[in-house]
Image (cartoon, rainbow, N blue to C red):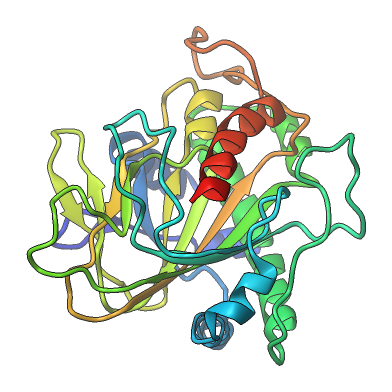
Length: 315
């Protein structure tokens, strides 16, 4: 494991692609995600050309007229377009968020043929009328699911977990892909106006592909905000609240934010990898005396997302 000058760990995961996880790799995982909760993942096996196609798809979508984007506006299944100034983090535990995020996004989840009322968040995605958009997004999602599964195994092993039967909860995972567009904020904009307000991710693992503009900041344990610039051919991967609970607090879910005062538009593609909605989250054996109670992931999601969806509809 190496560090760049901004102290964000760099982890080479090439051996995971060969179904190996050496003690050195597991040590690197633990050090990175126990101490900071963020790291650059390199040699991950995802074709850079595919990532470029995803950014091209995102740029083409966000360049569409608003009326076209609103045809696929966010629905109750949390799939679709979220316009700028309509998303406010009403559940933030880090600070009171009064201003909406200065970003627009398009979200897809797992593609189901029909919505099953017994399964929260099940159903088909909404797709814009853009050539080759769906094919690119679905290929990228499939590749990232495979990578995320490998990284999650390594993360759990790094904490001393021996029984990986928990991976059954990820055979049909809950996933999101979010294509984000951030306009540049004025240099004299209020300090509490963010592209994305300070938050932790609520799931297990998050994979970020970003452009060269910058703006992502991670809060170090001492409170300092660290810049996380683009590292070529890498993903920025961080731990979310549910993996923090599963590992009994051994892996850190770290506050982060986006502040874009670069003078240029920023684009990023974020993939979230979480367990099936029926899974009960609790500290795993091998991680010490449990510090957290069991929590049903689907129930947790419903409580989190309903509030934000109602706020979005009212915007």
